[in-house]
Length: 340
Ligand code: UD1
Image (cartoon, rainbow, N blue to C red; front, side, top):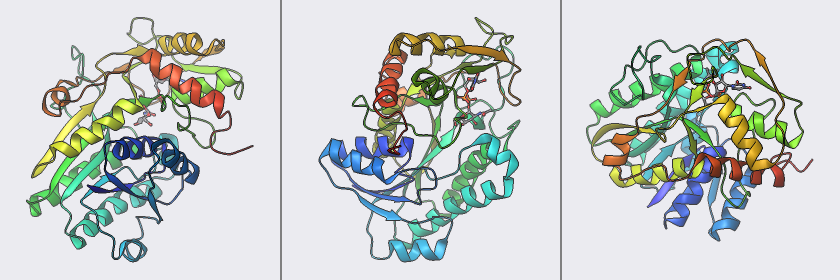
């Protein structure tokens, strides 16, 4: 298939592009480079020895997107374009709603223009309500779309609803919503990886920057949670496993909207992450305990059995491999994609 990959130059998008190319698909990337890099796509081309067509375009601008895609043919859309910084979304909610919702509405309209019915959407475990007492791993039937603590998370839940409603009005639409848990790691070559702009919001890139010496120490957001060591527990999934989940979802598309968790089913605490990254890098990770971050939950771990069963997909790589690959990326590219 020829696949329009919206947001294909970003962290997850570049790994999805690589996996699609290796599976024999053609990839058309649409990206506005607001939080991504042309270099990433160049490296994907080198790694796969395949070429990728790239359209520099803001999907929130329908007129410009129509013009940019005029005459282009594609069979399916994988939509990973969007703003994703939780704190920024609290400060600039209108910007987040406008960008993340408009780009989805526009993509759905562009799909109709081009007679395309296949859509894989990048959703997030953030759509789940905090787990009720006694619930261990989150399956797709857990309550979602309530108790979300920031506009970024709401845009994911709202985009899911937009896709469901539009599918209802266009029954030929085949959509899969992928609820990512916490993507980490990098391609094992260390050539592509996560390059957050500014101070990383997320744990793994922050820890990697402490290990390389770009940051002094990690702030651990709370050590009094009801978890095995008091720090927050998450389901960290290797980005290559996550990327392969998109390939599996493409193979599974059929009329309707299906929802899948992409996670490992295993939980790691903040201290577990610090230890594993220290082992992988051979560096010490200094840290201090600070107050919990507002909006954080104690634990969020996937029940990935629906994706295992129906998509014939499972996360295969270990957390130690994710740390090793993340360190390969960080140590070979201490300043990410910028040369400085
Ligand atoms: C966060 C977002 C989520 C988003 C996801 C991917 C919040 C509340 N949630 O998930 O909406 O989909 O990123 O972008 O922001 N931690 C530290 N110190 C740090 C950073 C994190 O101790 O400097 C801890 C957190 O408290 C948490 C764990 O590490 O227990 C993971 O945090 P993070 O990587 O930000 O992911 P989430 O909070 O799960």
